[in-house]
Length: 157
Image 1 (cartoon, rainbow, N blue to C red):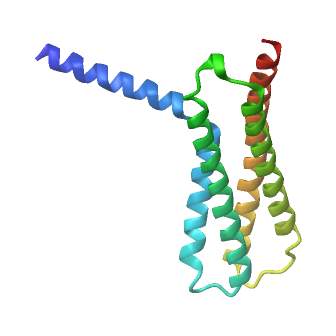
Image 2 (cartoon, helix red, strand yellow; image 1 turned 30 degrees about the vertical axis):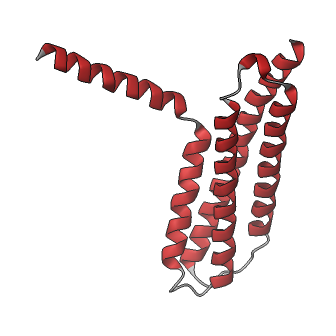
């Protein structure tokens, strides 16, 4: 019985440590944007601002797709041996993150340009989207710092 308990405890600890290593703030932000997009989707049938809601939903899905692509690039990047890593590959990650940051900033500007909404719920969803997008921009900035540090390390080697 002790062996089974220790084995189960060992698996739980290993799984918890592996899950913690995979956790990044970008994943949290991606999930928050996804939940907001689901909330928007449920409101499509009754809104009086269908164009605004559709634009916000499209922007959310685009941000999610861009982040998913970045996570895929990281997974591919992590399969490369450290000795074979070069600054070009890391530079591509930097360019991708900058592109995501720029497109998200453009979405915030377009939401800032909206002056009227017909529904209070649309206005609340727009405010939440702006907050999430601004949060994404800040978190991408932190991720860029990390990737840039790695790139500088590679240049020195």
